[in-house]
Amino acid sequence: MASLAHLEQTIAAPIQFAGVGLHSGAPVTMRLLPAPGGSGIVFRRTDLDNFEIPAIGRNVAKVSYATSLMRQGVLISTTEHLLSALIGMGIDNVIVELDNLELPILDGSALPYVEAFLSAGIRTQRRRRETIRVLSPIEVRDGDKFIGVYPGSGYSICYAIEFPAPIGYQRASVDLAAETYGTTIAPARTFGYKADEKRLRDMGLIRGAAPECTIILGPTGPENGPLRFADEYVRHKVLDLIGDLALAGRRIEGHVVAERAGHAMHTALVSRLLKDRSAWELAHVPVAVAPDEETVLATVPGDAPLHAALISV
Image (tube, rainbow, N blue to C red):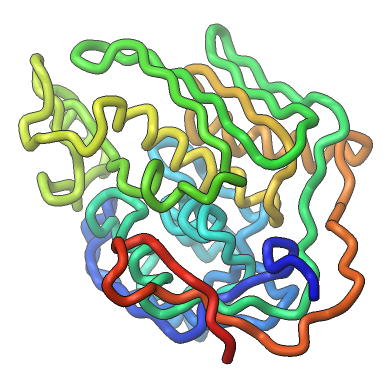
């Protein structure tokens, strides 16, 4: 039987979320549905005759304080946290139904998604997983900002940020092959400076921001602490990056380095990578024998919340 790590996965049952959009402040109900192997991640606007927008690079729209997708004038906004959770937990195929333009911000992290995936179960499918294997470096630079992807086994990220006080300089590295996303990256929340609130609201942004879903920074530190990690800020940037790079359409096999980057540079790297067909190849580990049955990743009763096991179905 093939290693389950080399097979595509979907969720085992529908999952529903409700909340408000971070920037629009608009109420939204979102439902995730299992999808067949090879489907990828597809957003569906149920308020617009089930119009579908695949989560792929050519559908990237305006990118500034969040990542948005657009197709034929229809918009899906703030996709990065959900996409990050899907990639981080190894879910390849899912339909995302929502009845408004912006995904719910929930608690500002990807943890609610991870917990919901494990509660519903993660189904391993019979289709072999393809990755984008990086063959040569691709880089994007903008002044002192930088992001690049390089050949390497697995999928690893090194990210450095530098913000005004009280954040300063932080650096983090993560290896997604280590299967620690749910405990080390997913809980990291989005953040913002109290001093910027009026300016951003005047721009029509952060209308859904609240202490329950955003780390609010004053001159000396978080006004609504404590932090979940001492370096929660850079961990959240890693979370965002994983979500934005999901727009390549497949999990990346390579090493990503970013310094002072953001959503615009993340998605610019996706665009540049996909355009340079000589810089990557589609790859998968050969599977000698297809699995006889599908399996589901489910939480283990009585174990730690994010521990899981495989059971047959």
